[in-house]
Length: 375
Image 1 (tube, rainbow, N blue to C red):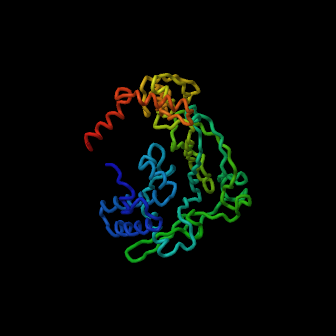
Image 2 (cartoon, rainbow, N blue to C red):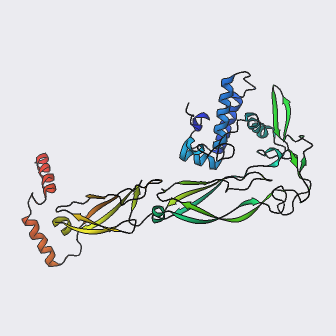
Image 3 (cartoon, rainbow, N blue to C red):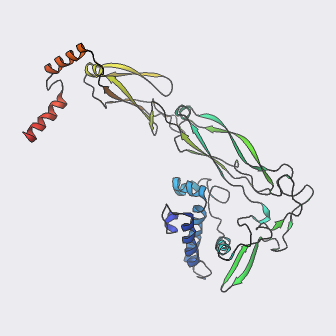
């Protein structure tokens, strides 16, 4: 069965604020929590669906990806516990976040992985390219500051020769439980911030984080035919995890800059070419440049009107992951002459006197209709 829209699941609109989103989530989570509906499989499924939706929409990056691509943003390697989104299925720990807000988190930090290893965050990089680069493809060099593994402690966060020790408060579980009426409340351990272990002698270079900020240089291969808004995922090139945790992913979002001549629609290119009134009347030809650097001749028949389109097959953009190419569509605009000499004006007046409905059928037909309607 197809997944329901996340905004529909949480009973909110797509323009909902973060505060309104959390309020709606709390209300629904309290209503459908399995502890309030013991043995009800439907309630448990509903609760998981609510948590999955909130897990996506509360994260700005995940929400932006979902708004653009829907559920497809987290499929084919884009989702799951190690990807851009997804839901772990552990609704107990997710629900406890509500009570961290209601009763206080005791200064703790939620979301920590047991053992202190936390996966690094996914990163976004906006890259602008030209239409010619989108046509040919390119290898782009980018630089971005990000967290990388601390070389001094190899990512452990502990001073060389030492190791993290088990947290005595939570006995290594990272969570503290206590009863509250018919609920069993669980919250993040404040002593270890949910890691289950503490570092008694931290690394001086990274202050116990296991990672440091560093400028990284990367190569990004951009295939020919990419469109504005294309997303390229570089697995494992995101932020390094805390204390030896896995790296996140890097997402390159492409934008194609506006071209001075061509406009793009899919794989087709469009350009507007002004032609003289004489060429439009008696016919002729002109040359037009193509995106691949070649030039093509366009023949103009007699009596061509403004807006006439000529299609040049195979002169457009490449189709991504294909050998096909789109077309180039040339639209002509008949240019009215300006700054005429006295003689040129006389010639045009003579032409206008000699013209008939055969030489200007469209205007003749229009005014004939006007006379019929208004006498």
